[in-house]
Image 1 (spheres, rainbow, N blue to C red):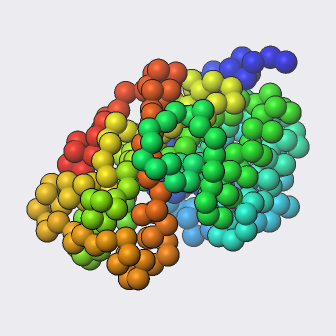
Image 2 (cartoon, rainbow, N blue to C red):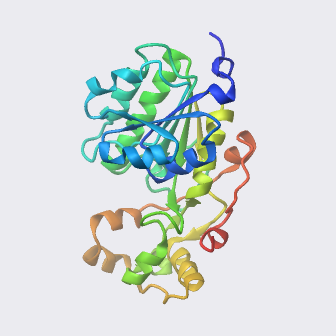
Length: 300
């Protein structure tokens, strides 16, 4: 079977399909506008004008309705899959429907999928690389594991080059809900140091660039940590953000107090601690950060 790279057309004629074209997808499109043909799947006709203004051709379809995806077959040379799984269940039928549609005629040369570092579950603050086994602790993370497995199986069957980016917390000053200042302004507490967890981050602009690096340079069937160089406990991250924004530092509470007062969703993020080794991102994808730490990114 010929390599995926050998099947790519000349750069100007290349067709990129973005599935799940939200904030990060639009950042990718801004970097490629006028250089490749940009397509985006959308189930909302109300987004047509926004997508067209970004130089993207909107394609109407719904990942929850496999019949609506038939026109995707043979349409794209490369695919950036950033669509989340459904909100319920332990599997991802949306990714299954997308892959079935893509396989009907021809095959894309490459697929990049935006997964989550939540697939690892709680790692007790250990630092590790992409060879660590997954251990999802929530259905939200299990759905991502299911999507990853479907993609890797698709790659083995079709020869498509698949790269899975495992993504931590995304932030940016111009990302809706993506800057800690909003949480700081609400006074949401963090854990005391003895109970705190290690978190990982990436600036949205760097994530868009990592998606592009994976599309062009990703090795076949590879997992990559799309995480910056920051190594901070969650409370220290919000303290740092507060100092940079000129806001009060958040109050500190014990884990017991958090369990009594915080939402289950927020608690889930306070229950998993890990530190990600990002050397594969730097070495294999030859990636250099615009914002290597939150100190630089929060000021951007």
